[in-house]
Amino acid sequence: MTALREANQVGNLQPTTIVSYDAEIETIFDCRDELALKAMGLEAAMLGHDGWREQMRLKGEAATQIFARRLIADGYSGLLVRSFAKGASRDDLNLVLWRWGSSSPSRLTLIDDENRLSL
Image (cartoon, rainbow, N blue to C red; front, side):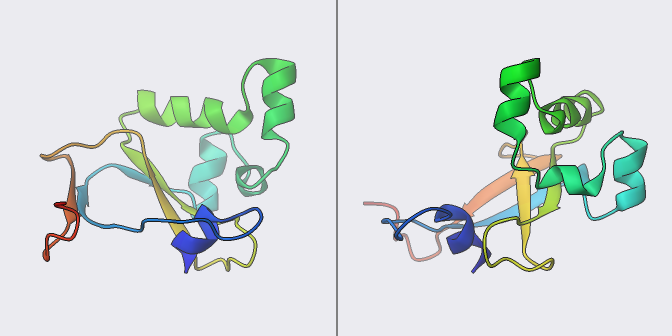
């Protein structure tokens, strides 16, 4: 359900394709670890802050963008973060990747055992 909540945060549900991946990603920052977040200069509440557009307008980039740039520079391939979509619980998670490929250390492979996407 997390994928549907994320895909449809405003208005009526629109046509959506959901796919599944097999992932072997070695360097993921876990945003559920509040001590690790603080060590990176970010409070957990800032992850779901809806004022990021205003931060971008005023400062050129949002605090979460600065955070992501720092993680990228530190060699992280992505982060694990709770969903902030309407109706999501603290257990609903998103894996946000900025580095992936067909081999380690950031292997991401589409699962399509029945060749449904081969048309």
